[in-house]
Image: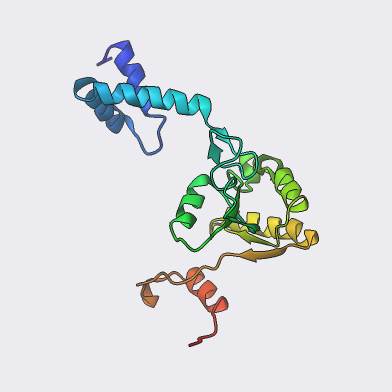
Length: 200
């Protein structure tokens, strides 16, 4: 063993973060111990407070330390639109576009039978109750364009349609600045199928 038990414990604790391997964890630990003690203590306090205080919004299931997150409690949001996403990070991405003013529902994952993730794990009972007890007129399915994301969107569409709620799927296609010969065939096929009429 190269380190004392406590240093080893610190390094191993830092490895729980995504993308952090042994070398990165060691570098972070040594930085905190050598130069970053004050910032490290602030980090430790904030991390403890966040992990013990932050839960989920009771309406949309995103992370929040309040019963309702700032978006769900904002009367200026369009409560007739509901965008269903896989993770809270997806909300951030959509909000950065400044194109959407509706509400959200966070699945916290996608259907994956191999991993034991079924409808119950995604809070679909809460979603159905929300659709039944509110004035939502359109549900936008914004799951990722992966096999699991597509399967999840298909499943959601099948259970939402009987609620007489319009169900749409976000479009996929060619990125701005992209060149056709670099685009994969599946993306190009989606772009062709989802083409729009050119207007003035």
